[in-house]
Length: 180
Image 1 (spheres, helix red, strand yellow):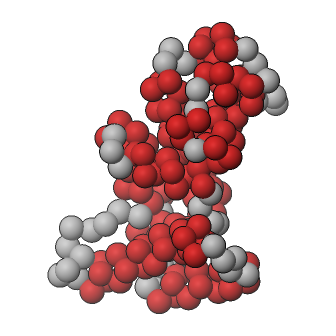
Image 2 (image 1 turned 120 degrees about the horizontal axis):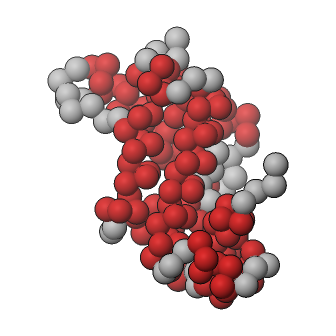
């Protein structure tokens, strides 16, 4: 099946962000990247704000699809440990420049953070009793480590060998008894 023009536009916008940063996202830059007209972009998105909000939703949806593929079942059919195991394994995929920039932008706009937060709440929630229950604290520490693994290459400008990434993820999964 051919991707819709809307998805084509969103994928093009992500490429613009990856290459030139969030501030480079304009109807004209995205139209050029998608090989569509400015009007074709405006047909789907009334404003730059609408486009940016849709990019956040698009990437959060792709992230959740990756989590679902790893886990093999929707989050609501998994235990907390199984969800965390999928989250840890998916975190072995390095953050892209676009993802990092969009996450930072989302921190300032609740409407942009909402799609990311919804995925996090389904797959790796932070338990309110993390200080009281050792198992909850272990899950929180594993989540923080997985987040660090996801950002590692972007922050250190070093590439971790794939086998090492998988070994770190599986170590975290075993350390908290997740996915067993």
